[in-house]
Every structure is written in C-alpha cells, then in structure tokens.
Image (cartoon, rainbow, N blue to C red):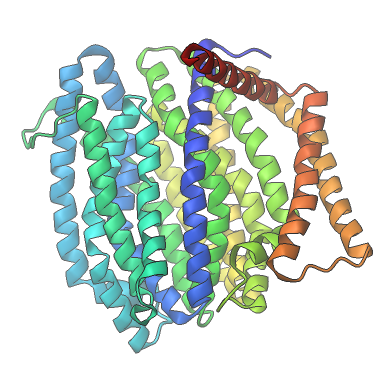
Length: 528
C-alpha cells in the first residue's frame, strides 16, 4: 500500500502537530493534577466548570463555525489571489470582534439565567459563586474568539507550529496561578490564571501572523467573499451548536446527580482529551487544509485518497490508545488525580466513566475526520440534518441513562450519538465515491485486529501476573510501576505485532522518524 506525496506531507504535518500537542497535553495534565489535589471533587470545581462552559460557549461556536466556513474559502483565495485572501481574513476578524463584544454584553446581562439553565442542581449560594467566576473569566470570551480566527489564518497558511504551541499558555498560566496564588482565593486562582494565559496567547499569535505577512486592518465592507463565508457559517451553525449542546446536556443532567458529579465528569473528560487533543485535533488541524485544497483544485480522487489515509492513520493511533485507557483505567486515574483532597472514592467514580470514554476515543476520532471531509465537500445541509438528529439522540439517551448509570451513563449516551453520526457520514462517502477505497480502510482495520488482541492480552496478563504475585499498588509509585509494566508491555506488543504484519501506517511513521533523525545528524555534522 503506497502513499502519494500529498498524503505523506499531510501525515508528516500531522506527526509534527502531534508532537507539539504533547506539550499542551502535559501542561493541561499537571494543571488538572494540581486542581484535583487542592480541590478534589468539591462543589467549587463544579462551579468553575459551569462558569467556564458559559463564558466559552460563543468562542467555541466561533471556533467550529469559523474554521468550517473560513478555511476552505481562504484556501481557494490563497491559491488564486493572495490579496483577496488577506482581505477576507480582515473582514471576518472585524465582524467576529463585533459579534464577541455583543456576546460579552449579553453574557453579563443574562449570566444568572444561563447558570440556572446549565446547572439547575446547584444551590443558590453555588450559583452566586458561579456568577462571580463567570465575570472573572469574561475577557476569555473575546480573547479566545480572536485566537480562534488567528489560528485559522495560520493553519490556512499551513503554519501549524506556533498556533499549536500557543494553546499551551492558558493551561500553563492557570497551573502557575493554582500553585503560586494563596489558597484562600480558592477556585478563583484557576480563573485568573486562564484569563492571563489567554492574553499571552493572543500576543503570540499576533506576532506570528505579522511575521507571516498578515496585517490586521478593520474591514466592515461587505464583499462576495464575506457573504460566502457568512452563508457557509449559517449553514454550519446547527452542527456547531449541536456539538456544544452535548456539553450543556451533560452539565445539566450531571448537576442533578449531586455535588461533585460535574467534577467527576470533567476529570474523566480531561483524560479522554489526551488522545483527542494529541491525535484527533492534530489530524483535524492538518486534514481540513489538505481536504479543502484538493476540493478547490477539483482533485476528487486525491481528496478521497487523502481521506482514506486520514481514516487509516486515525484508526492506527486511536485503537491502541482506547484499548490502554480501557484495560488500565484504574491505574491511570490514580496516577493522574489520587492525592490531596482527591480520595480513592473519587478515583473509582472517574474510572467508571473511562469504561465508556475508552471507545469514545476511537468513535469520536473517526467521526472528526469524516466531518472535516463533509465540510471540505460543502455538504453543510447534510451536516445540519445529521447534527439535529445527533442532538435529539443525545438528549433522549442522556435522559434515559443518567439515573440508571449515573455519570457513566452520560458518556455512554455520547458514544451512541457519535456512532450513529459516523455511520451516516461514512454512508454518504460510500455513495459519492464508491467502495474501492473502503476496501483498503477495512483491510487497515484488519491489520490492526491481531495487534490489538495481542496487546490487550499482554496488558491484562502482565497486570494479572503482578496481582497473583502479591503486588498490590499502594501509593503513586506503585500505580506508576503497574502502569509502566502492563501498559508498556501492551504497547511494545502492539508495535511488534504491527511490524510483523507490516502495517503500512507504522512503516510510514518509521520512515518519517528515520528521515528526521538523519537530518538532525547531518545538521550536527555540518556544524562540526
């Protein structure tokens, strides 16, 4: 199985972004570890995440809608008229700033209503504290929205490095705030840190845009390109709101499960987001630019080939990650959080959510790549229909499962929802492009199954061997040793079996790493 130069470039870019995303994942993990140690699953953690959800709602809509509507049009203009590309960038950012300012005013005016809607289970005192947290986080609403558009410009230029690394700053500043500021400020230290980090991220992105030739100048004049962006944004508004609606639905029902339920859901979500951010977001960041470029050039065969490569690469990375999260969820949660105010009971509750977050790693990742392909194809009406159905399924399944299964039931409802959408979108791909590429995608999964089975058996056997020999993890070092032996054994087994059956994605990653090492050696020799 061979890969075209364009596909190899897309995968190389994905690997670079994955490496850079690891820095952000590590910082975010240490931040969550500090929050768990200091606050555990107390009510004030629920308050913070409710306030954060409300303040970041509009920027997240701008993120989803802006990237889906702006990047494809920017790529088309960049290929033909670069001045027109800069013009549409200025116009979109100008109108986005007006939208965010208006949104900030409305958020302040109706914050109390939003809080009662998102988390009706909070007490009046908790709602008042949540309101104050939302005011501290209010600058994030505008800064995050600006940052989204600046990153969209840089990724449209295929400059992924600084845009990716800049996302570390809010987590880094909030980690420092929790560690440095006095404990008497409580959860407000986290809010102050995130706001300061967002300011730093904006400064870095403006600097990189300026270096790349982009100069922001306010433009409020309507143009055909702006109307096209607005039309595509309106078409994608339902999908964007539906995906964010999942978070609101989860917060709503979790608040009815008692104090700490929102915190438990969030801690599990943060562990799920490690593979999501490292792999899924990286593939999304890179693939949309390449998909849009192929569609703009009318290269439909290359588009389908790139989509197939993206799906196979996502499966190769996400299946083993989901498996490890499933079979080693107990040690992972204990290592991540169990210290200070975070008790063993809290760890058990979070581990229960990973039972369903593990398959969500794979389902969500494949769905993400397929959704990017729908955007590049311009199938916005179809996405809107699928998204409306997803929202209905999410609400119905959450209402049915949250009382029976608690917080894990909310995660299971998300798995069922994305699985339904994944099947619908892949059916459209098969209808439009035929089943030829589907055979290679099925074969790629077939390559993975023996390696997955072997690695899962190895991980469980090693953990069982430790238990049968009287090894019972006690403390951080014990959990780390268990995870290192069982998880390391499973990972090594997977790589050995994948190499034995000559998995093409593994071979491509190996060639890329070898080329990087050789270039570094040549650079060192040249200096000497």
